[in-house]
Length: 151
Image (cartoon, rainbow, N blue to C red; front, side, top):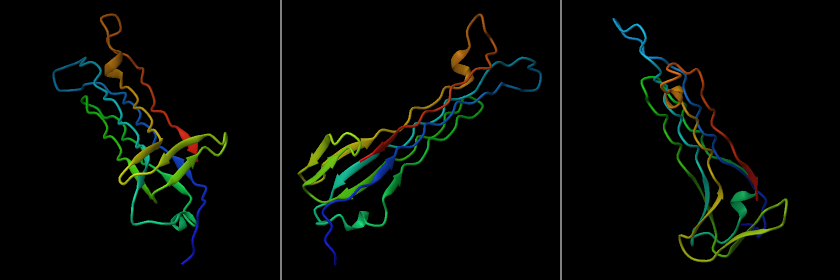
């Protein structure tokens, strides 16, 4: 077994889901109004201390970690599902640096300690959020966003 004490990985948080552009349509209701739901939030990435590990050899071949994206919003005011967070196991005593700035992000010293390294993107808003007494049928939505980091 090889011992690896330094590794460079790339982490990408999940993108937030886009909002939905939808209008209520039912029999005998001619102008139902907007009913587009919001998207779900993207997944975040955490580093989690595992006492059973003593080397970073797991990062020798797998260097890219991506969290899942949030689900898009749907009609009938249904919100998209939030994506699950991704946990990456590291040994006790791991120092985490930002590769671009060489800034120390965190020092993981105790059992089950976790460190947020990439925050998931926020959700987008559906057209139901933009209705008002003046604009009763908005055709505006917002898209979810995405964040990228390298450590």
